[in-house]
Image 1 (spheres, helix red, strand yellow):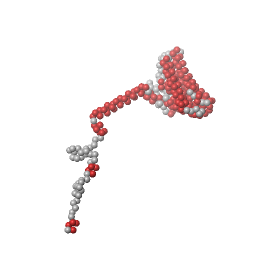
Image 2: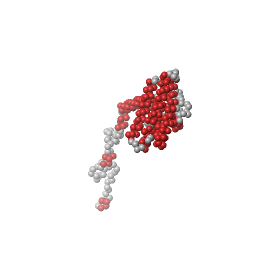
Image 3: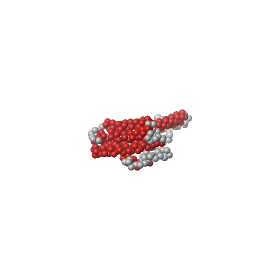
Image 4: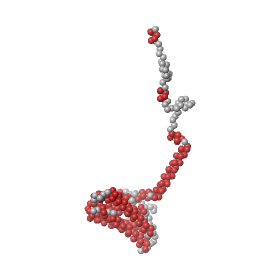
Length: 299
């Protein structure tokens, strides 16, 4: 009957049930949902929680012991390196020589150029320890010598460039020769102090600081030579040579001769005379080196 055909009910598929007219089950959705998930027997079909390699590594007691042992070795190695570095390179002492400020630098430069009016040359101490250079203009520092050496090399390059003689090799030779002369000075003074048997608190770093102050006068001489020629060079360099001579005499006298007085050595004794000659020789060598390292830069 036509009416019965129109009233024929079509079975409705319920959720979760397969279509009765479908020949094969659609498993694509199930595969996409469970892709890569492994079912654990007795786990009610739920995928097992994935465990990261880092978590498994940290959960291993042997790995934890290895990590602790490695950390202890690293700490011991760092401590060993710090001790060896401080033995060969006294980092703590170097911090003292760079403890400066702007006021100290200005006063020290003025003292290097005009040492004639300065009266008190004693280094101040606080509980048997010299105060930082920024609190005492008489204390040696490494900031001014280091900056003066770098500036000297730059000024030397400028002088060579104005004469069309600049080359990286020549500039490197200029810097290396200045360092070589400084090293020879320090070694010669240390050997002389040993031969004369001087017990002084003058350290190697102090020597480098005092000998490095001559670069200030060398810079002034070369700059004046570039601006005013040979006359300006000789005038300024001559003034700076006399100034550094007076500065070295008054500074090293307290370091070398004062120890002799404290030991009770007579002023006119033979050993004291040797110490005085050593002080004069160190002071006299500064003007000679200032001229030797700069005369070829001004033409």
